[in-house]
Amino acid sequence: MSGTVTSTWVRLCALDDLFVERGRAALLGATQVALFRLADGTVRAVSNYDPYGDANVLSRGIVGTKMLADGSEVPTIASPLHKQAWDLRTGAVVETQGKDERPIPVYPVAVDEGQVLIKWKDA
Image (cartoon, rainbow, N blue to C red):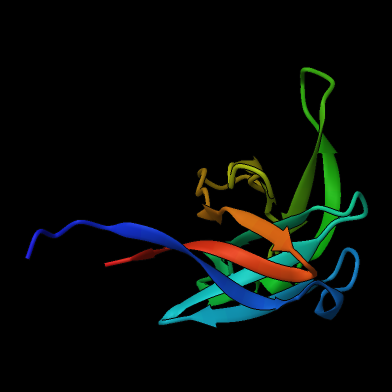
């Protein structure tokens, strides 16, 4: 056994199953993923786990944007629990609400023939 980790594209749902600026949760093995279809048509996938609230709730969060110091605007998800917010592209915290920084995992997503796919690691 080599211990090599490979990644494969896994179908999660149809694009039409996702509503604009609303989250959906998906279960991959024991991992919960939050999916978001943004107003610009892109789909983003992040961990559904809120590290501040210690709960799988980010798919029920508030989709928005945040203006960064450099003037750029990034798509965000704010926790429904304590309102911390993360950049949906990178998982970086953009609003800590006075707490320490706790980034979240992001996952590559593709849309092919109306199907949402996520790049998932196989052990």
